[in-house]
Image (tube, rainbow, N blue to C red; front, side, top):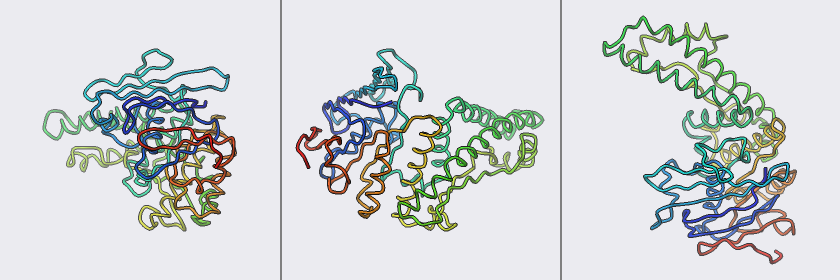
Length: 367
């Protein structure tokens, strides 16, 4: 599925914009602070119904405006046209539409798969494990949409067990009811752990070679680090029972896949702790490109790549290599302050958008 057009109203720095996107590569260029990243965020917002930059979505509404609106036109593999619309006003419910009909959420099957590189997303590499768990769960949902329910089921069971722990701790319930919830939580936990292990097993063989090609080194590795080594739900239920005393002391469940981690390594050492910022950037980029290859193979659909300022810290050889990877197929949008940093930006097939003074103008002049 291809995003063909992006329309904005009162989103971030844009009062309005109406932009045609290229089917292959679109290069958005302009000075720092011109609003290039805002366009990537708007496209993500319109395709998913959420921001890729902030959890406080009040920030997406242009200063002085009351409502932000994003509309994305799409074309699917059967050449059918579709439109996704997201309207957001602070303090009001978000309004989502697919082909003019109101929906509760934008389903992953009705939009392009998307991989996003933003400098701010380095937290995915160097931040807390919760970010990496959430990310791998999104990969699972994109790879096997039916399995997205596993994480939700685990979350519900975990909330129920935690609520019971709190009641037991305060004398409002008996600890004798905990084993039933241990068994229920363990059942969903094993399913979630197995899904994550399967996703990492798909990504890992691609991550290493891509990391090496980008210059991270020849020992790039992606590893799943589950908290439990239980072979099945029965064994995990036993482990949960063994942690009951400490759980009651804390008031919450301290064991299970909500404590797992996914590690990005170079030479056997985690980039989170031992990697430089440049190495962490390369690790993040390699992870996203590995996801792109994996989703292309498993879903027969190359994800839309949104790449913000990705070329600035790559040498010319790595820039050319990345451009070659992106040129293999699929749709990509890259921001840059300098067109010379994007190999092939002068090609007639490339769409170039010059951003300045709150406007994005298609560049029809040869570079």
